[in-house]
Length: 107
Image (cartoon, rainbow, N blue to C red; front, side, top):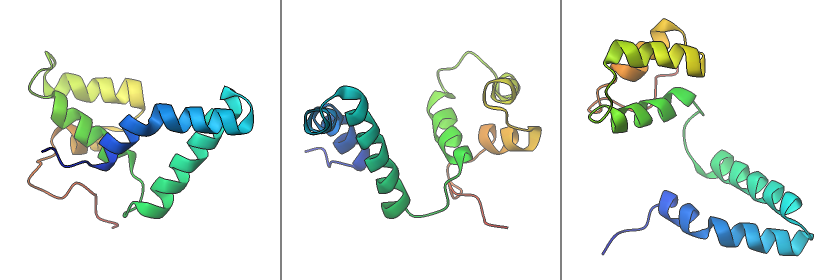
């Protein structure tokens, strides 16, 4: 049996969370804002480590490396233009070795 993780739980429950909040608050706009606030509080209070968008892009890049038609250098250029990373940061993303820690050191 598949062990549930936070991604699974959030993905499965998001429609019901939105419905509950919308019904409780009288409309989808207010409901969505409440769900957004709840998720923000969840990640702030229950996830360890400093928020770092490079972590998100490392994980995304790792997942697309084997299927992307773009070489590493081309993905680095894309990261500069799409996400505004500087050249050092794009290298940290595209060249990240998954055997190394995901989070960057605080230095």
